[in-house]
Image (cartoon, rainbow, N blue to C red; front, top):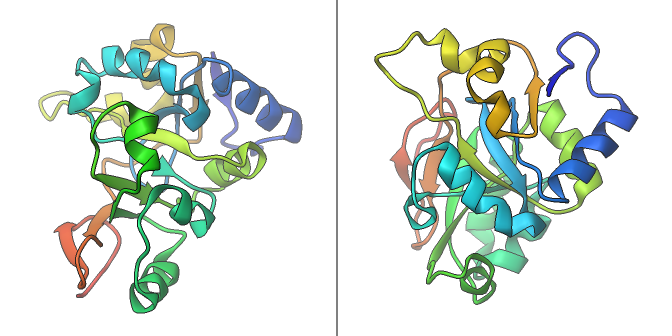
Length: 205
């Protein structure tokens, strides 16, 4: 299903439909403040097999990011961080930043793997914020894979994305033409924040 909301925005009934879908086994492709993403509700952990098949990877090869409404989920998934580091992170959200944090004991049980770190992101995109507000739980997210030898429109135009992948997912949200740009990844596992990948979010250590 291709849900066109570029001109009208998400309506309340559409948000409720989306949340019901992804909390009951569905996966979707959606716009973000960077590249289009693929994901499902965190409570729908068993659908990771479908996401892995979609991107031709094993689950243990994929670096999922938790897309969160705000920073209130930090304590559930990450070990405590210093007040100065928290203030830096708080000043950057919402926005195109992924924060790598030391995972707490909840994460290995959740992913059924010995994950020691977790990526958390608070997106600014209004579509995601609308969904996350109603879900009240994170989205498990992976960026749409890009073939550098293919036409970039295949990864930015939601109609073309739907043509390629629509049968493998439950929903594609048309939020307009996307970007082939990525979030800035910041390693917050040590005392000082370091840049792992410089994306569209500016940061100076």
